[in-house]
Length: 67
Figure 1 (cartoon, rainbow, N blue to C red):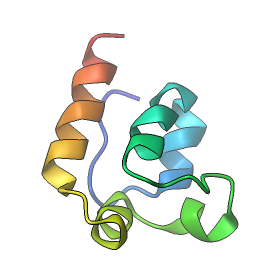
Figure 2: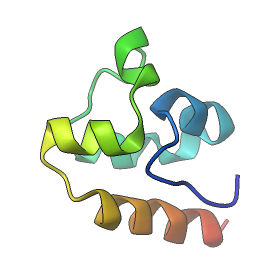
Figure 3: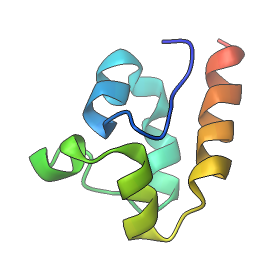
Figure 4: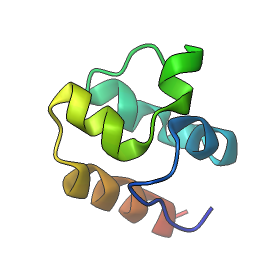
């Protein structure tokens, strides 16, 4: 995976790169294995958890670029 976007599901992101799980845990999304959370888009998860989607996307993409 080279980059995440706001319309990608949490499940697809984690399936591609489990190393980004801590970014979701930091935002308060502690139920990463839950089927409902895995089906949420990154944008939906950010909205539910009160996180700025653009900031989270930038953090994850910076991390992925450094891999």
